[in-house]
Length: 286
Image 1: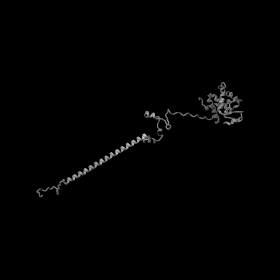
Image 2: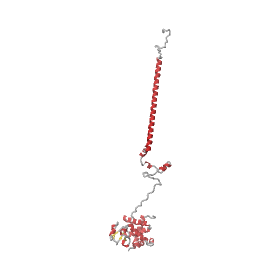
Image 3: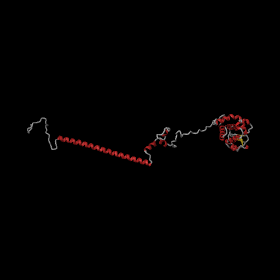
Image 4: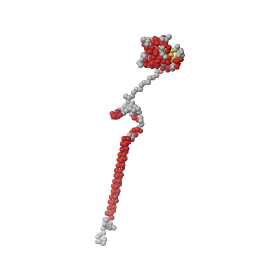
């Protein structure tokens, strides 16, 4: 029992709470807690604001850098400097585009019109390709001839074709050369000057020279010219074409009309071989 005459409260605290003008201690504790919470909240807000401000500054900085790069790229383009895309394209292998199917149609008409062929990238489309001309093949020797004889036979045939002589005339000329010189370009031992020209042997039949053993003294031409297989062939074929009806004559008769040989029948034996030679040089139908 207290002195003021009140009953003691068994459940009251043993130490009375002291009141002050600022409030009880519990109230002070509550206020302090609120202040700390407010301070924490304020600190968090400030941090968020600082982070937000930092983010904004970073974004502005990135935008400024991007703008500077764009301006730099535009300036480089205007000045003719290659862009990064162009550099990447240049870094690709030069032959990469070559492997593409050129038969595929371009995606747009503009792409088709802008595609041009250059020496480094030739146009290989079907319309641009041209078949390379067939190179003439050198016929192999036939009927027992060697290389020199075959070359002389080719010279006779080639000359006759230039002159437009029929095939029959080519056979007569080759057969005549087979009889007269065995298809060799022969110089004369009687005419030393004939040996100054390319020749494949020396004969002693008067002053006869060349494939057809023509004589300069009989008016066939200068010795040097008669040693030329083409000239000698022209002289023989020109004389043959002046023989009336030579195309219908036997080979030996046509040859004899030009050569006036002491052995007129000897030319006939060479007809089949001469025919084979001409056929090997100029196939039938050409």
